[in-house]
Amino acid sequence: MAGKEQTVSIDLQPRGLPPPYPGAPQGFPAEQPRDFVLWSLFNVLLCQKLACLGCLGFPALVFSIKAQDWKVLGDLEGARSYGTTAKVLNIIGSLLVVVAIAVVLLFFFLRP
Image (cartoon, rainbow, N blue to C red; front, top):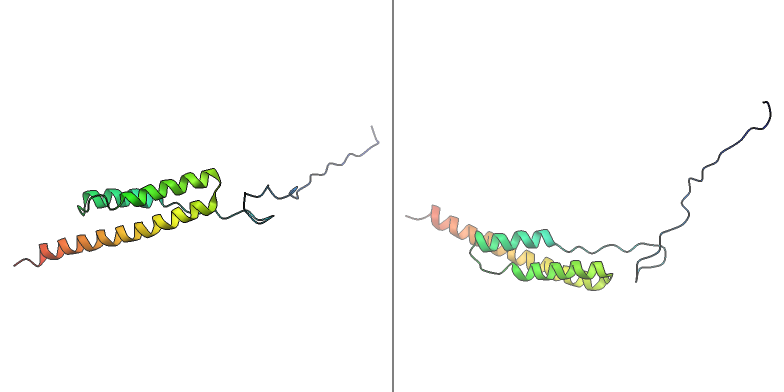
């Protein structure tokens, strides 16, 4: 059975870029905005239980969930806006928790 040699070639180059996200520049995938849901949930639990600050972490959680919903729907600018608001509220909530815990510790250890 001398005869033909068969060759096999495999194309290793990608066939093309995936379709772009809505609103993204042509050929580049858009950067996904962050939603900060875990940080917001942590702040809600921490504000409620440790620092007794009531519902200060709840608005951040609401904005985080809205950012996640807008990201799923494909509106990246709306998701980025809600995510930025959630980030700012989380920073404020985290700082208030740290200050409240510091005040409680100072009164506990410096009490005569």
